[in-house]
Length: 364
Image (cartoon, rainbow, N blue to C red; front, side, top):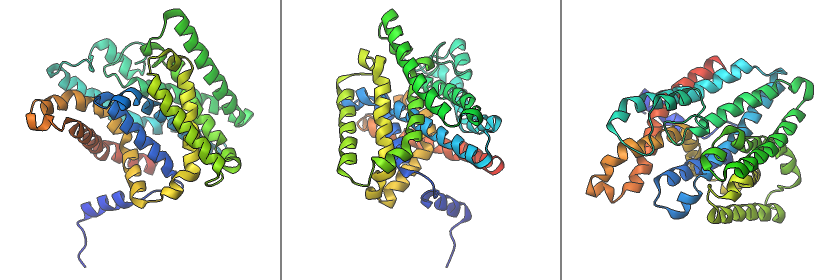
């Protein structure tokens, strides 16, 4: 029997490989949902999704807190220490190459485009490369979330260096205090200047609480799974359903610029998301169970960072050409989603995946 060409065989194996033994596919589902919501939010044309799609970023935040806590706890259990340099190096190889490519392409293409989504100035460029987008300015409207994640990595890593003396209690205390402090700071800012999303909504000292909610979700996962999330129990399904319904109703009635959201709403949404996320890891995919759905979620999850980074450039640089053609403009929304996914996949396959493979080989 003839063999597939080697390059195709390699790609096919990667596409069909379902997951690592310890991979939580439910989290891939949430990441896939998050990137879909972000795309809907920024494109428009879907009234409810345009209003509520911002919560996709909060899903990413909760996921990051959950996964980073898991990553560092595993390293602590394996080696009884946290290697800060290794952690920063591995995260840098994940985040920086694609982000650097985004800035490079922006610098090359921005002279030919005028868009409210794009503000290329030296001040904003310096803010982008120093991850101070929430405080100084930004070239792209969506890169402020990268700054919050980077600041979380540094704070959480610093806290983790005290695990030897405090144990995991340091994570509990830090998460609870951070959430409380963020709420107080947002309330104080609202009292002084009123509701302004580009202050209370994007600055790290006001928004980092969502990531620490993810840390709490990770720390609570075993207890919740053993005591509350008994498979298909009426109580666990009822609480999960109520959480989803509450989240949808609040997103329907309150925008991300409302007083409710900018005060305590961000924290409350993060708690609901975290609860549903932990529930899904114990039950959700056990009854969904379709291999195709799992692989589809894993596919989009792995490429979600590149899709997130480059969906705005697709909107600014490519969509004007689509909308100028009558035939293409009639299906502009599907083309936007398709182009965003396609560009994200190309960047992932050509840049992110090879770098991550090299990273995992030399710094596993």
